[in-house]
Length: 492
Ligand SMILES: [Zn+2]
Image (cartoon, rainbow, N blue to C red; front, side, top):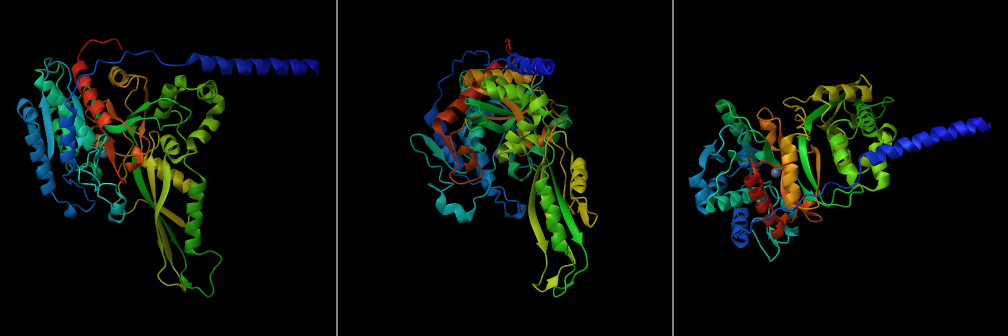
């Protein structure tokens, strides 16, 4: 008995030893990176231009017939008027009438160019919520700390920060080492098929590819949580795919006075319940692994131990991450029933009941694998699982390598401009214009250099969208610093 206990004791000791060893192996805290010497910018002038830009309601509507393109014409004219040096110094192409493409030729023609992106369109205002806005969404109101309005964060804040940075650098007589392209799409919010897609086709026709692409995406925030008490810059190295499936239950309809044991509505409801009760599996091995690896060294000992020992704590980690909707969306293909329809009369059992379920697909899954998993979970041949007519499936974007020189360069620049920030690669839950550029560069990063404050993220597409003037200023300084650093030898 004593020997058994001794044996157990030794095994336990080894087990704890491995846990601690793994934990210490990933260390604590990152390297110190010196902060950059940021250039002063004419912030009041920049704020005025952003504010005026927010007054132009470049709204994308799902129904393209409802889009008022005169506002896009005004917005283009406004940019030309406000940034004459950018429009003269850079080559400018108008793409499909409303999108813009700039080329700023660099000194070194042998280096692949980079591409900076942003979009000029915004989402509509929910008219029912209009009276909840502190300032009307298209007034471009500014006060001493903040610029208010639809698009302030998504994505005119970045668009104007790019324009300000380029204009500033031209004023100082600067020429970049590496060629820079800039693409502003006009329909990102409705898929980018008229803007970004056309720009991508233009590049393809010219055989132009990119060292890296930087478009909107994760910001800089303290709201990531997960036990990380630091500011985090979330750089998405992929974005989720998309598929909507239709579930159809067919059966005997008839009068409701003598119903069978099961009705089409009951069968469909059971299928949906099964989907809700059985989330698709977490993908802890894909990009999420890079994310956890980046976060782990910054965490306290216990969470670090959980991260470092996924061989034993994988299930626990999945549980912790899946607890809230945003963590859940990061680790798995999400399941969201969005439409249900059946029945026409209260005393008639419908012969058919239908539901739509939307899935956002994590890298590692595909639209086809999702359909198969859904069929397996429902496991009821009376339910037909199919893609609705006219529906489309989109694969998740290829994963850009977070260990590449390009990622390291971007990460370094972020830490120089935002000292103390932990750069975390991840997957964007929503789509961006970069979906049209996946063939044009292996290094596509989705990151907005905008420091957000509490609640800012839910104001995007919501009520009281706004940007703080200090965050906007830092955004301009970020793009200046990034452009100045291109092509410079730098230890990474
Ligand atoms: Zn956007």
